[in-house]
Length: 335
Image: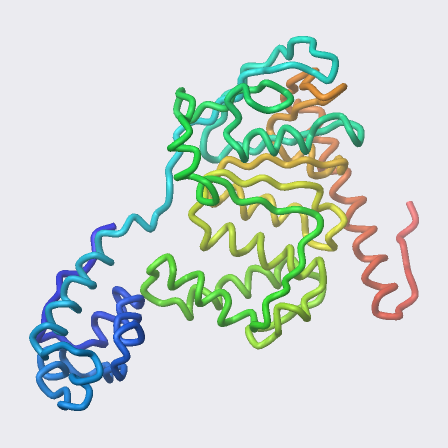
């Protein structure tokens, strides 16, 4: 990230627009937050003796600390880790037989994981999340940009490389949607956290059946609303280059729009699903049997035509579901 150059004669408002997290300095130091029209030069020179006594610093020392704080913030890598390619080298199935797999994915790729319950889809997602290096039950190896990650790199990337969306997702934080999203946006040092949060709420409402707003408590969100919020957050705010999606078809959200959002964010997306609509939205799908990938299939032209038919049928089901929810009579057009 290339941050702003600290200018003591420029008003704080200019700095807040470029680096909102710079305001945290004053909370940490126990100082009053300066008004946006004031300049750092005037602010620090006007600090009273009682304030200086509380901090144990002189005006010059506080000004110098603030300058170093802004400089350090501006140099932070908030874009997150980048991945040009993700390669999965096959391991073994549940019986120890070799898995014939050498799959390389790049940003923007969407791959569906299909197969019966217990066939190994979730284990595959876990191997990717943990950057497996022959040290999981499947013995798979995950390569980033063609190389395996050593222990130090795996630890440093933990929680930053992969974002995971599961079918069971509920919040326990006593916080409203807006402040939660603003906190995430501020952690990314976005210049306008409020606008970023508003965009995420708007996108989430395009996915969710029942709308909500920034004032809605996180704990009041339904399962579908929670997943819609997290999908929008991952698409717009999350820096993780890899997204793992585990069976979101029962979330009551617009699945096609959700996948489009995630794909448009330039991330590698892996979707474990039993839903034919989601499976055919991906250009490639992995078929699981006995704990291993049994086949890698490309979505054919005929399947893409079938997808459109399935989408029409899904729209009929969606309308009928919404009619029932709203207490209306269900009307399905006759052929």
